[in-house]
Length: 123
View 1 (tube, rainbow, N blue to C red):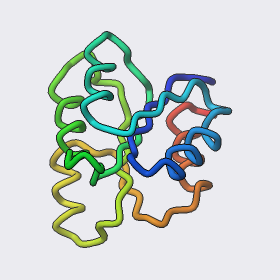
View 2: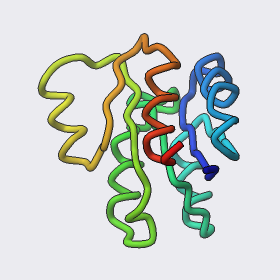
View 3: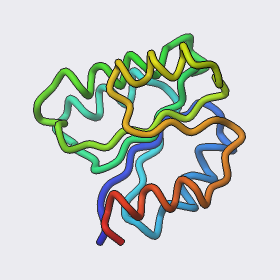
């Protein structure tokens, strides 16, 4: 089964690795900032999966994008993963409260993300 995947990460190498590694599951749209990703979502696009970096280079907070996704009923079916270097319990709790479905700590093996996406798509 294939679907649309949104990756939001300001680190180009990470974004490219995710795009390449997840392309077998469907179309991967990559953004380097939350503003562009939010604008894309508001245009009517609805991915099945969103993988969002917590700290984005433009000072944006990936949690704000997650909150935007969770505040709009059009996006109820999106599964959201947070990709971050934050490993403390407080950060994990903040992500869960924002509506994150899966929390990946950097550095993360691509295989773990691929398995999660495969489970979401039923592949």
